Image (cartoon, rainbow, N blue to C red; front, side):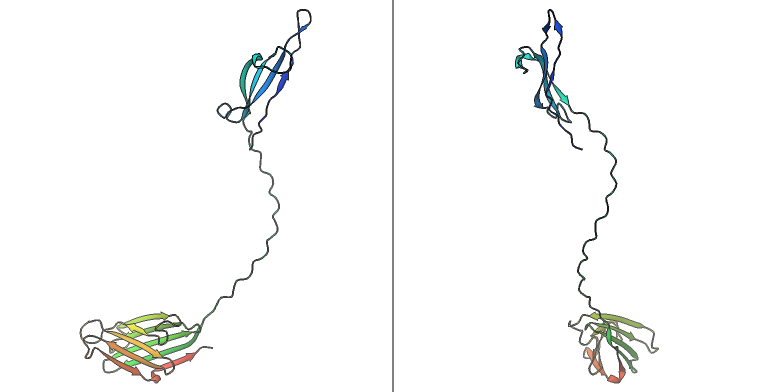
Length: 224
């Protein structure tokens, strides 16, 4: 709340009779300007008071009886808040954003391989999305009773990245010799539907073997 500073310039006239009808000198009050904050923290003025002995209507320096500050009073308490105004009109609606892109599975492949002499089975699936992204899963069924000793894995490739063309996946399952870190690499050529299986193991003769699987081991589903 602001404070109104008032500059005081007053003239107090006291008229009385002294002796044989002689008028008494007139009391004068003059302002010297604003008081300092040390004198009046809330603001105020400095005033001089004295008798206008020579009757010239001005309080001369020799006529000053006292000089003192006159300070403003303290601010009053804030009044109650007024009633809220009416809501303004709604602004103009913004422009619609660009449409997002959607993607769905367009082709789905599933391949099953069983090596009777090991014995060992492999499962491979690939989902090709309309965006070109590829999601692959794989599993190694590593005992004579298929379904036990299962090792699984998954991979995702963005369209155009290395591996997206064939959906390659690595499955860590050492079936030969001791546990020396052997693994399987599976990849699918979609046009021919040939699944290539490759096993690498430092203990295997030659270090690896590759076995392309016939297309009859894979099925393809086209999703509209």
